[in-house]
Length: 214
Image: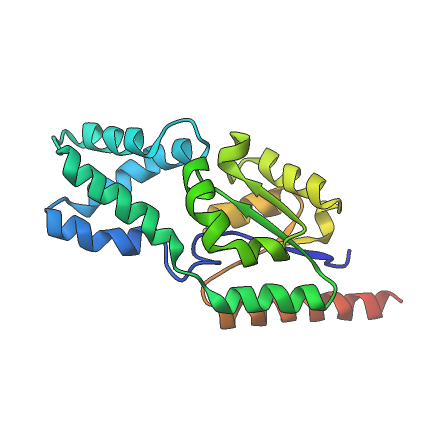
């Protein structure tokens, strides 16, 4: 089936960097082993993104898992850096979203994001990205996260198109795999040049198959 809409992840796609790259320098400064964060985010980040715990609770769990006693001031510094790290806009992605819209593609946004960030930063800093979208699903609003099948199905129902006509762009492989398991096409984002070229190749391959079958 023809691709009729392109759905975008937020962090790492609509942003130029995500939290690990921005916070790692603070971890070095504070003398906290980065492995503490890697294990902690793997264990607890999705609960935060689903809105089941707060950011402060997530960091409390990370410190507790590592057997660390971290003072409130240091925790607050990590929380501030965490929030701030998601505010670096990828203007190239915005331009591509607008160009796709002008070509007649629907646009969606599907992201793992906790409610606090969505309300305090995302809706203001990324208002023009949101304005391009025909449908949006934020995990923290729904209590479900990528790569759960339900979150892809929810976006599909909101955009009003069959799964086979949707293409998802995400920088995390498990989320790309989740989209494919839900019946979507999907591309892994590495750079804007790469993903735009991959998208055009995908369109060309579909067009070639259509011509052969006509």
